[in-house]
Picture 1 (tube, rainbow, N blue to C red):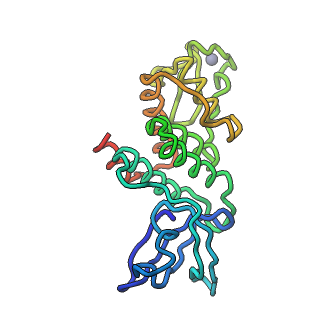
Picture 2 (cartoon, rainbow, N blue to C red; picture 1 turned 180 degrees about the vertical axis):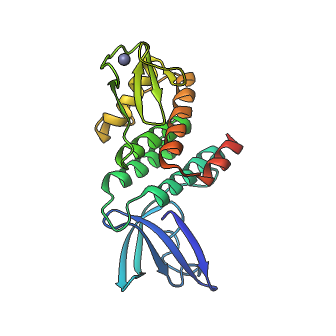
Length: 236
Ligand SMILES: [Zn+2]
């Protein structure tokens, strides 16, 4: 569950990110009532099984059972801000009326590694931004220099406007230098099997540089202003 709004005293309209249908909005009748059995399963950032009734374009939740609820008490505010940003990524880029298998797996895994495994939220944010770009039609082409085909990994530069890399000889000036660690990390994030996606480590200074690049890339490519990023930057 990635978003909600109240309707009347007891009902809510929930935004769900589902494996089979992508993003849907569904009514939860009585979900606010304290006695409701659905309380946990319909709380923000819960991962739940739903039985949903569809009449014309309206979805109504009949039954819900929580598999996992992210966020215990006392969560870190930076972690919280990144998680909210992930919800906005889903709402804006998640498939609508379509299966969402890999997208959903990336988001769930990112939440798991960030919250349960306490991996660096800045690194998890960078991984998520770049991988979500790759599976949403904005995959960068970072195997070799886009002009001459060189793969001189010590001297590569990234162009976030068109998602290509250029070597030292072909660059024109405004590109972002990628040291080998960052270039290797970007290649891993874009091309690795999802089961290996989170298993790499880079030094803190490279994490910070990588995250600047992936954020710039997703904002430029989607031409979207993510309001949750403002909160993230205000608490970081
Ligand atoms: Zn070149």
